[in-house]
Image (cartoon, rainbow, N blue to C red; front, side, top):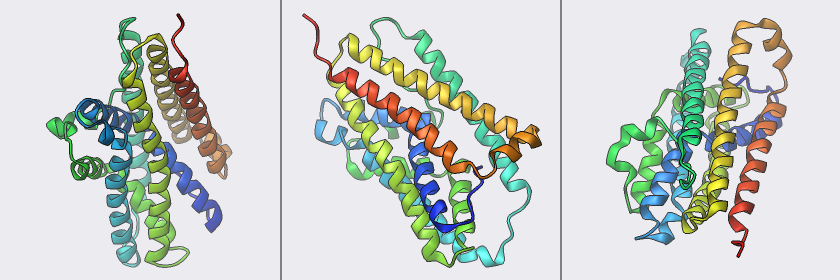
Length: 269
């Protein structure tokens, strides 16, 4: 669970950055990858926008939760264990996703494109194979019905009540969705480009993103665990939320740009 700043402008910026970081979640990447690949041949126009539609559905649930929590915030006090439980669950999922994606990169054959691995997507079964915009958005909405997303949306809403009513909670939820929409939308477009070519460059590009997603997941999990067990680390990190958020997004974005540039390289004769 993130520690949010107490001034409104910093809170707005951090919420947008957290949305971007959430869009790079391995579960998001894996499901958008599956939706895009499923539609690539029969509905290529839809395939390019699977990431965008997924984020819209996901963000709609986040906004609904934020509005609901903000409405009852005055009658409910957050339990002390709420933040700790959220942090533990987040660390466990990050370690699992980071390890699975690292294993996927290492197991991939020399002629195989590495596909991101997720946990939630496996629970959806055939819902990952849909070819209607509304159903793609529905998949994104179902993804939001998990403890990490629910707790984060509730945390935003409760923090927003310090500055005002439901309008502030709605603004934070909307910014979170826009950040997620940016990264997931670009990811869907990139996967569609990756599918369109099956050369050596595409193989390298998929490995770049696989290793980055795995490394970031494990790094964030390790840092979260260090904050929980070491008061010194927790104290040192306090007030640096924006720096950490921008740093993580910058690392992933630069790696993503490098992977995209690889897919644009022409084949050598």
